Length: 280
Image (cartoon, rainbow, N blue to C red; front, top):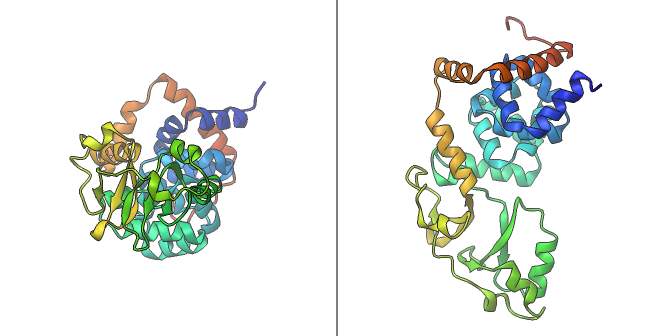
């Protein structure tokens, strides 16, 4: 028979969003203890689905290395939401623990006001310089470690967006074919300072689930996915006060939730949680 710990971890893996709702109802110290004890591959997706305020309260109770590990796995969009709810000193400590590329991404996103395209874009999309050949570009795609390896965008040496390349075209092309010969236009571009509210019906979503984000002079700074937009708008609608958040989460609870949360709390009770002085 599977142990309670095995059942809990199986639940985290199979239902990260549901698990996030359960953890939001636990005391922050208890939720943090569970996130810390679970493997990162299971805990990070759950943290990604938590309300940023609830997730940040968990991170506050973890050591810098543990918190940074969870944030690395949660991704840029979720991570920047968490960082906005942390104090400046703790934020700086966590950023110092992260890989340089991720730190740059976070600092870029934090520079945009909350509720704008720039705050929710992914700055690590796959981008190719226009002076590559098709063979060089294909090798770059194969070695890509970017978050989004979809049809890559093409830029000039001033980082101006020229268009994109379909991977199918890249695979069919000769190795010596100039990349510019495969270039397709990108008519739908989102200004980084644009407000997210109102973008739900943007015509670009009918053609692609990913749209390029630009600064002045068409300088490409990232991409916005339809999934990130939907999550941002959903969080904006929830935008709970502490009391309304409790009421909303309490309303979710039912027989199923009771069983799951009881199981998780049993596991949490077995974990060695060091409580801070004065913390209940």
